Length: 513
Length: 113
Image (tube, rainbow over all chains, first blue to last red; front, top):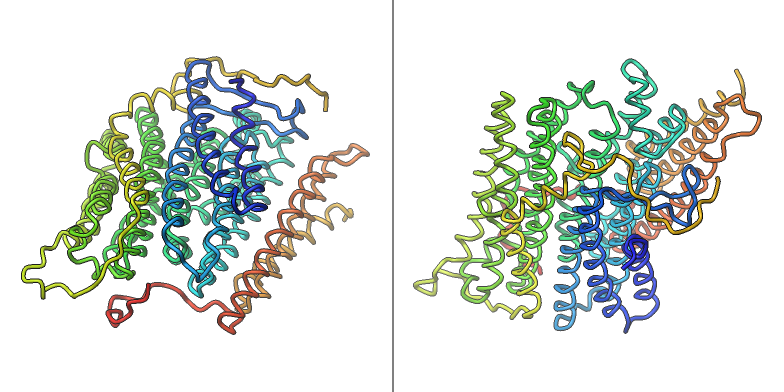
């Protein structure tokens, strides 16, 4: 398969599939399945090539920057694309199972299919973007499809959450766009490679305009990543959306804006000069871990609990900004953060899907109604437990390896408080995961100790898709070493085994701009 | 003051006004209009930045960005207005009520699916 087809396939395939799914109802599900498979093949092919040949670049239509769109793929990109393909594919299977047997007349379920594909297309395009303006466009596309997914159910809660998310996300995007405009006016380029080189040469320190631009970009992205205290929109949005949408939002959409922060901070901005800002970001992360976990423990509704757990887990991603200031541990901290993001994406998607199945089975949103549910829903409870291990960060999950590396970096760089927070976060996560598990494993002897209730059977496909994703999540730790190898391709803090210039895969004749 | 500076300053003021409106007004339509004002301000700044060099021809790249930005802003406003209409139809309200989770008291009886 030619690499050009891989690049285009990742973006064009879901985009075309989305339009098709919108126009023709009977073709919606087949289109989703085809895209899920095609995306998986393309993502793995891209990862394999990046591993073998180094970073790749693709000029769409042969047009070079500044007017053309440059796509770019390195280890981090490939890793994110594989994550999207695996999680997105499983969610398609789960939803297919859910829709075949569950009829919900309160809203038009079929609309999920086209929006899902548009969301996947914008995610893929975002991770492949080689310039910061293109990142803005894809981020907006992502926001619009995410808002549509949240509001899909049409209940008052969902509409409120969707509107609130939309207002927050658009303001955030405009802040980001303003930052991009300022950076372009100073450095004359939006390509983030060139921009990074320019900024290193020019030494932005003291340059008010650049600092303002960076501040605008980062604050816009922080708002979108829902880091404490900007997380207020997340729990209602993620808990009132349909289950498949919650999983997509928590697992993938949040990672997209975090990916941009991570990419820009360490590859473009002169992070070494921003130690105080880095410490501030890490402090927000620490607050997110503690506050999010405590709120999760305090919830009475299952999906709200899982949503607050996302607030907490996002916090871990921000520890890197302070840890990376010590060059000796920078690579460990950076790669651990990416590993944590991937691991959380897979694990949290599985937890949300399991929570959705349990909610469907009991017909109630409350955690209390789960008493003894393991008797009726053994597979789903097993999936919840398996993925819950990932949230706590126990071996052999990827989160364990990631937390271990973060812990090591924190200790090696003498940042003891961070080590304490990482460990406390794990204990708090154990509390909210075990609270659900112990309740669902309750033996009702005598029977009267449990409230009498009727549970609905959950379709097989929903159960096993969730379990499969949970198993991937828990075994990620064993795949940590090939993942690290992939990440090394053109990563900051790591000796790049390939030449710095990406291999161009364009077959078009170059067109002079 | 050149007219380029005037554009840039007007843009900045508009961004401020828009941000203020979006954050302080409670009426949702005002919030959406605030976002649009903010967007218009951002675009004005971009247009002014196209004239940053002494070159007699303005830089086309910011213009291309503004065009793309307008398309995005229009679709976002359309989605926001559609959501607002639906929200109004369901609730009869034009402002967002707080949806934060209530603490665990007095929630036992709600067993909605």
